Image (cartoon, rainbow, N blue to C red):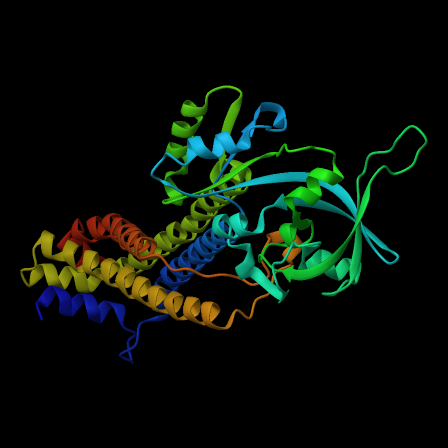
Amino acid sequence: MTPVTFVARRYLRSKHHNFFSLSTTIAVGGIFVGVSALLITLSIMNGFQNELRRRILGGTPHMVVRRYFNEPIENYREIMEKTAKFPFVQAQAPFIIAKSIIRHKKYVDGVIIRGVIPDLEKKVTGINRKMVDGIFDLNNGCVLGVEIAHNLNAAVGDTIVVTSPFIDQFGLMTRSRKLTLNGIFDLGMYDYNATVLYMNLPDVQALFDMGSAVSGVELRVADVYKTAQYSRAVEKDLGYPFRVQDWIETNHSVFAALKLEKVVTFIVLTLIILVAGFNIVGTLINIVKKKTKEIGILRSFGFTTRQIMNIFLYQGALMGIVGTLAGIAFSFVACLLLNQYRFINLPGDVYFIETLPVEMSALDFILVAIAAILVSFVATIYPARKAATLDTVEALRNE
């Protein structure tokens, strides 16, 4: 141990114990709190964003081909033939989407109907893997989201009525269809569970008098993070009046809000680390004032200006490293517990998901650690320079 590190460590300890002094503990605690708060919050937001992405992809297609103004597509088989030529397209399925009214006994609710061909839909969205009761069977029947089934007090095997919302000139409903509830699904997102009903494509075409037309064609692709590139290629090949939307564009507002929230949260919580840096400044200035005599004696013993400065730089760096490592360790354990037990519940109708997800990122931990240690080091420069520039004679005379 060099004389510089020995003196620096001695200045950090209290007079009668080997533990940190109170002022040092407060400075270290500031770094600890800032690092912990920032890492836990970033991990929660990473988990929230990634969980939401997974759940969106679990029940929605990667890309959708539709006409402008959402006009019906008559030649959807031709669209499927053209898109099948692209090597990145793994599966296709025509669909109809429409709003309607659903009734079970005395219970009535609004619903978004998705008319699909079951065998093709399974390949595109995998909805059949999300069933919590019954099976994904649309033969003379339908499947509902778990929330809307609860609202209708409906169970598998019950008969429900889907009605076209249009009214003729006499004020009577024009079309309705009785269906058997064959299954109930849970996509993990409240909005989907509370609004979506799956029906057989021909049944929906008949209900809304659409003939052989569909609303669009769903596509499943090889890489979900290249859908923007894929959609441009498909749209260019199909030409007007067709447009292609990918899952990122469809949910753009959600991901944009999450990104903005993460940036703002990062900035706000970084201020905690900056405040902790000021605590280090105050602690070291206080040490300089208290140790003025000792600093004068060290100078008289031959300590150079550089060595005196290094003593306080070492102190600040040590406080930053200890606080950062403690914050990282605490954050890691806290995130593991949050991820393992999921004991914090969320209102599903507000946050889309019902438990608090946590997903740690090694890059976040590295960047926060570097930032915290850097702030701690920068905070020591002024006190260290102040200590190094003390005049030896004046320091001893004042004491």
